[in-house]
Length: 315
Image (tube, rainbow, N blue to C red; front, side):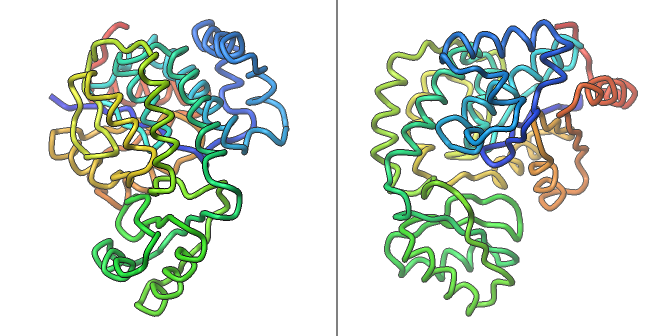
């Protein structure tokens, strides 16, 4: 049987207007947005649908992204399209866990609101940085940065795109040495902190305290974690993995390779942007990748998958 994965983007994919058409046309999606507003005391409609200067601030971005993606997914599953496995890039992993049955939407949204605040405020502005390294093998990057203190790999996105993270001066030094060693480009990223670096360990420790008070549920299906690129089937592993995830590399490329090796041949990216689709094209062009970010995408994707023989179950 063909296997289908739902995959969810991370911070950076957010877009003004995300989920608005779902809010207006789906009672399930509207309920998730309204629940987020009630739980957080933030006007989620205003944050996601209207031009503002908060959507790109980490402490707001994370809750907004998870709300929008889970609202879209609720309608998608109502139409009968369900996954065999899930995964999400960094922040997106919280959507993956929720859709796999491990957390209710409201708990995932509340948790990432706290995570966003921790990530924004743990490292003072300007002390940390991130840099994308283009067209250089991961092994070569690791070799070049290994002697440099306070810099490490943050994201293994796809062949030819790796992100490094750490103290600003160390990242800048590493970027220069990577260019000298043959990287085609190094691009300093406009982010509010050195995400997925050891500088975020204190944020992980505080997040662990929040995780102790979070209600988890038995997983209905597995999800693949960023931390190890392995399937998680026991929800008891999740708090420890999420604690570690905030300061460890996102093994996205390895996660996709693992899912493909396990028989996943169809990926549905749910949320704004097509970042993950782009990564998958570079990881394995033989798999089918669909994208849902607009209301009209749902019918189109469900119809195409039904015609291609993917199993459709009534939700």
